[in-house]
Length: 216
Image (spheres, rainbow, N blue to C red):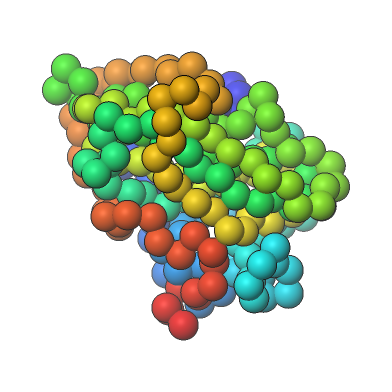
């Protein structure tokens, strides 16, 4: 199963359950408003890096704890209320830096309700534009439509296998309809009722990664 399919099949309940990982001993080192998710999250670390930044004083860092298999993955995520973005074409853009990464990149998922059930309405995890190896800061972006049925938007970065990935200066903004999508929409309807996850923000926050989990 590809990382894209794993992200697609992860239920909204799983994201709510994993959000509790931010309360551990490393919580104070995490960027405020961001959490680490994924089946293999225990094998990775998400933290604020005050020594590496594209601009400002810090960046978000995703790193493997030791040598990881290519099948293992984890992702940083922030959950955003989709209501203000329904019917808009949105672009997530940011700067990425990599050190010996098997695979990494930005990702966006739009969840909502179709036929009374929880559904994934769109997913782009940069699988065809992934960052590999060691790279200096590069601009990466995802362009996705937010359907009228959208309820929650999940944004972040993911890493598969080994290595270290830095993210800085994200932006999430509406773009014109003539800006092409970075992937075709893929809708997956589950047999689960929709359950709104905890920790949803009304708008993206701390996209420059200048605040720790305690808000400092």
